[in-house]
Image (cartoon, rainbow over all chains, first blue to last red):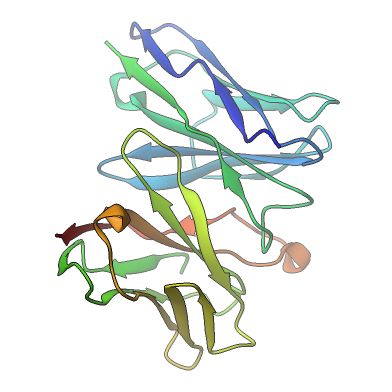
Amino acid sequence: KAGVTQTPRYLIKTRGQQVTLSCSPISGHRSVSWYQQTPGQGLQFLFEYFSETQRNKGNFPGRFSGRQFSNSRSEMNVSTLELGDSALYLCASSFFKPLGAEAFFGQGTRLTVV
Amino acid sequence: QQQVKQSPQSLIVQKGGISIINCAYENTAFDYFPWYQQFPGKGPALLIAIRPDVSEKKEGRFTISFNKSAKQFSLHIMDSQPGDSATYFCAASMSEAGGGADGLTFGKGTHLIIQP
């Protein structure tokens, strides 16, 4: 059974640009969550989607957005990139909902903003 | 209210020894406590998880101890091996029934080194 797939693995963008990251969850999983990982702040929850609806959102500015498609694949978008957005962005999928259920992470997308 | 505090920040253990990592939480609404293991360049991998209705859960060499009254839980790695060298994260979440769920709240991580 394939795991969570995130693309691309690495990305370098210039400040002010926008970026789109992709996540394909484990087959059959309907919930996708996104996290930002940095050395200073650790792992922080961005948002969660279930059945194409955003159910929960963390404390991040509106420049961070996402969506989920009918096949459960998800994308997250960051507009007007700032240097501080450099981080490892992780996607996690779970069967029904991430809260109280097993969440499986992908390898992440390493975003560098220059 | 949503914090999970993890200690120690780093830990060095001799091969064959017991590694112990501790976490404390504040929000009594948390009802799911997983531990994740992360190797460099990889995403976190679910190791073991516990719910507040039990005080201990064991899977192989990994054991979670849970103290609901103290709002603390810990990970014990028995017979630690060099391959266990990684960063370990505790986390907590709450069931969605009450609303206001914010995904998994993670501790800051423990960098574990097992010396051969």
